[in-house]
Length: 182
Length: 99
Image (cartoon, rainbow over the protein chains, first blue to last red):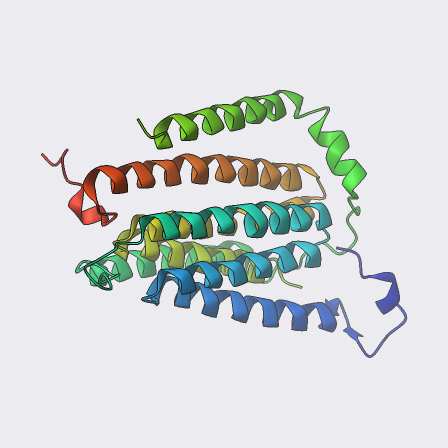
């Protein structure tokens, strides 16, 4: 990934191959994301969980921009934070049980779930450390602009793109048919 | 920046999402945890695209976002239908197909 032009003259901000400013940004983003994700799966309030999901998704958008994928980052904000979270809030609103008080949010099987997720995370992190140990992110690769992304979508991936269009139409019709009242 | 710091972030987020899917009882919360897992995958796709100097990683991430949008639409419609028919979105109540 190329160093932003503004940082190139700053020797104090770059030491060797490591770009300190990007690492600081990554550190802040990743800590915020992990904490918000943990709160999301442990909080008892469904609406709070949706708002924690917003924090995680915004952090992921920041990570995408940090990696130079600005179109994916903006799409993340528009589609996820703009549309999907609103859909979730509507779902929460429409399924709020009118009586019976606050439902216990976590099932009795949570210790098993914790063990399973720790196993998955542990094995994945271990194999990543074993395989990619201290590989550096390529810092002299090409920069992809939005035009490059759209060129790729509308040439190499034109058939999957059309398939996704049909999939979205099918999902739209399916959701209407499922949620229709009659 | 190390390649691994992004991959490990993705792995940790994915594991948290797995916990959410398995432990939560609210149907909407299960769908939210699935979104978390899809996001972890997106981070991996983009970072490998950067590492290999190809734009396909970003394109795949865009496809995953589109499929996630479709999945949430249908998933929430199913949850609403379940709520309308059973007056509950507790996933433990829906054991009609238990063997």
